[in-house]
Each structure stands twice: as C-alpha cells, then as structure tokens.
Image (cartoon, rainbow, N blue to C red; front, top):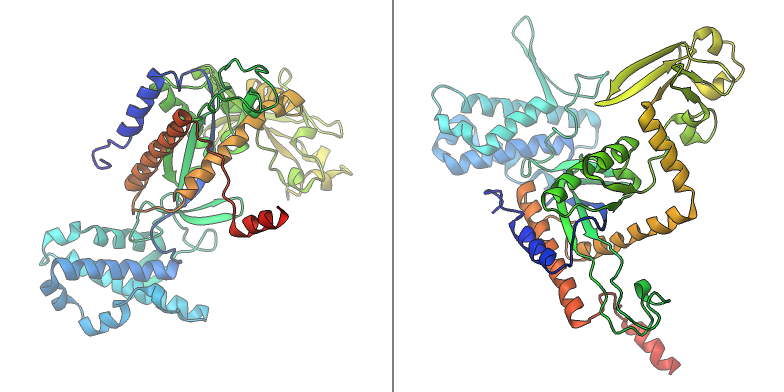
Length: 470
C-alpha cells in the first residue's frame, strides 16, 4: 500500500463514514501537536556511518555476486574490518586514530566503487541500493582530490568556514539502512528518525438536556450526567523527516483537511506552528483562525532579557523609518526577502550609533551600527494584534483547549508511535495512519458503549494503602 500511494485510504474511508454520521465536520475546532519518532536503526556517528556504509555495500555485493567480489577484494582482510557491525566494538579513543580510521574507510569505499563502476564489471551491480548509498555517503562526508604529482588525497569534510562544508541536515544521510531517517532536535530532545503530527477534533459537546446542562461536571455536563463523552477524533496524521519544522506543516495540514472537506474554523496550535505570516495567509486562503501564541523574539537582546530588542523600536511605515529607544531614526529602508518571506531591513547610521552611550545595549556589530528587520505592515499589524490578544484572559481560557491534544499524543505513544516499527518513511507513515484509525475506533467504541477513556490503573501498592485505610 505504501508503494502504491494508498496510505490514506483507510483513514479517509473511516473519516467519510464518521462525517456521514455527524461526528466530524468542517468549520469546527481542531488542535494539532507533534512528537519525535525514533527510526528502527542504530544511531551512528560519522565514523560509524562511513564504516557501516562500506559494510552494507560489501554485504549486498557478497549476496548478489559473490564470485565477482572474491576477485576484487582480499576477503580475509575485509572480513576482519567489516565482518561484524561497527557498533559492536569500540572505536579508538584518540581523535588522531579516529581520523585515520575514517580515511581508511573512505579508501576502501572508493576502491569498492571503482571496482563496481569498472567497464569489466556487470552493469547491474551499480543499481544495488547499498552501492548508491555508499557513493552518496562518501560524497557528503569526504573530499577527494588528486595533487599535481598524481597523489590521491582524502580528507573528511567539516563545517564551514574551517572545512569544505557539509550538506544541509535535511539532505544528509544518517544511516545506510534507512536513507529517510534524519537527525532532529526539538527543545532538549535530539533523535534520529522522523516527526509525527497529529490533528484531532476538539468541539464542544452537544447539549444533552441534563438538568444542569453546562454545569460543573465534565465538558459542560453535570457530574452524574449519563450521556457518553463526545469523542475527539483524529482527522489528520502526517509523518515527515525530522528536520521539517512545525510551521512548515501548518499550511500542508490545512490544504489536506480542505481536500477532505474537514478544514476547521478554529485551529489550536503551539507557537512552533505559528507566525504572523501564517495567521494572515491561512485566514485568507481557507478562512481558518489560528489560535495560539506567536513565537517570542529570538534576538540576542530578547533572549538575554537585557538591552534593546525589536519590540523597543518603532516602525513608521508611512515615512519608511524606524526609531530607536534613544530617538534616532534609521537612514535606510530596504525591502527584501529572507528565507522566502518578505521583510524590510532598516539600518541606522554610524554617526548616530557610534557615539551612542547605549550602544552596548543595542548592538555588538563591528560596524558600530544597528540593523533591524521588520515585517511588512500587514504582518506587523497582525503580529501586534495577536500579541495583545495573548495577554487577555479570554484568549488564555480559549487556548486551554489545545492542552487536550497532549492526552492524544500520550495515547499514541503508549501504542508505540515514538518508535518506528519499519525502516523508511513510507512504511512508517503507513504505520502511523493505521494507528490513527485504531485510536479512532477505540474512541468510537468507548463512545458507543459509554466506557470512560480516562480510567486510571491502580497499582498494587495503592490498593494495599486503600485496604489498610478501610
């Protein structure tokens, strides 16, 4: 099903039936959250990645054409180096020895590729996936040059500006056994694998007619109301690479929900999914109101809580100037594009910033002047309105609705959502979609039978305490 692109069929069919029964609908309230997913492969450092890539290619060639391989390599020597996984033994302690071993792996890899791509070798050997992975890993992690006297020089790539540069994280292979897995970071979490985004309904429960209708019990019901809890149902699941940021998925989720005629009217999200540009664009494209706090200012001054942050400057879009807290105005106003988004860069003059007594609170630039980026006027107004709303009690009460998605993530994690059962993004995505179907069925069963989903297990120790208290 993954290869045929039919991953969504089961969840779409289930949502279609639920929509027909009035349990999910467009224009309602939904919420989204994400979590990390650890790939079903060992986490490798760069040294282990190089060695394991050579080992994977040798294993594939030994299985596909053992006679050819026996004529190209010294089998006993290579078995000593690549006969067992590199994670089963400890690498050298010294950095010099590790660098030497990394270059040795690269030499073996290049020698193996030259043999595979030789004119006398069967052409189909080049089509083995492990061979192509080895080629890509070597290109991404090593620089190979030939000097004027014909000597081959191989060295590991390092980050710029000291080294030759490494590929961006979203393109860099992290394991020869799962070429879709990537290194990701979210707050204090650092993992190899993917990211899972789950969207569910969070509408108000329909009126049931209980005496207190809207009383102190669960979700506007009386404490003893016999009506079953209205289910929150998963409407969308997306599994992406670990390097895909949450705000890259906001519009994707809306487009796909719109395609199912299940787009929400109000969408509750954390700050990772939001920006002023998305608040404006999603309201215009789909009529969806994004509810959540915008990301805080990430400038050095704002993070330190000292000095002049962006909020301390005043932008005048009519005169195209920015005024600093000391009353000086910018001398240039330059519209530009930053990371694909429209922006404006305002620059102050050296004559104003140089002798300013508050310059240490404003900038540490060697040019002795401050540059500040401001959004276009419509985004600035939307941002200001959103930040003002965030401080109000009604907003906080409404946004509290988003917290419920944490329970859904916990339920998904308890069923193994954070650990991939299969290798590769297509199969992992299929697994998560079927998990969403299963969770929806569990919730529907609880709804139909009146079984509470939030029942808590009682430990043996807690039972002992209760028995003694009785």
